[in-house]
Amino acid sequence: MERRLANETHMSVSVWRGDAVGSFQPFEVKVEDNQTVLDVVAWIQQFADPTLSYRYACRVGMCGSCAMMVNGTPRWTCRTHVKKVLVDGHMEIAPLRNLPVIKDLATDMDPFFDKWVAAEGVHHPTLTRNDPIEALDPAEAARVESAAGIECINCSVCYAACDTVANNPDFLGPAALQRAWSVYNDSKNADKQAVLDAVSGVGGCHNCHSQGSCAVHCPNALNPMNAIAGLKRETARNFFRRRS
Image (tube, rainbow, N blue to C red; front, side, top):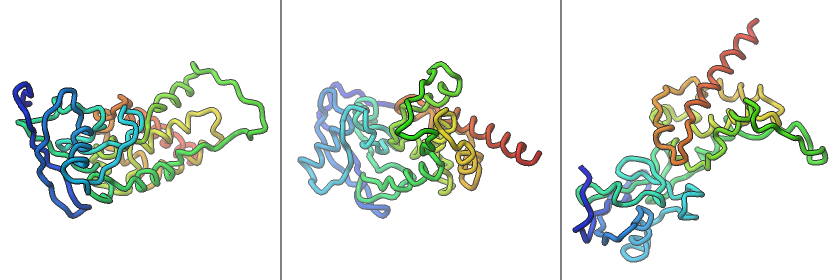
């Protein structure tokens, strides 16, 4: 049951300290109006313990770098108000799941971006910079599919939410596969086969169990499951084309 804040003056906050081996450290923080979880972390670092490590940049939900686990759920801390997550006057803040912990609340994002590249989520150009700019129809079906995941900012919330990633370290993950689907459907992409080859192998799209945590927790309301379903369909078609 969520506790009302009307008469509360302080909250108890447990913050993860250390790397993969560590423990939660308790802090007492004053409750303020319109306070976000990132405000709480910043207050602790500024006034209680300057050695606390964490990551943030824009503070307005544009960069995604402040993503952390709040009461076991991956969130953008800059957009998460304390009153929505405080339970019985207490809150727990930890680094993102499924990523190596550098220190405290800061994780190593390299594995996440390495998989983004491994999924061929990179552009294979059909033209050079010396060619005229190609006109595109935004209403074209493939273009609509390509643009569906354009608001992904690689915050890794979906990656942290994914139980398949937790149980299969080779799984490319929702964000990487969504990016691969966008590239595959881009009419300016010259190598669709490279994308299909990348996502059909070990750790590819067919490892997804369709549990939907990625769609539930995406702060931008994207649905990587749609992209993964599209990749499953196209890789299956590609398999039978090659065998015929």
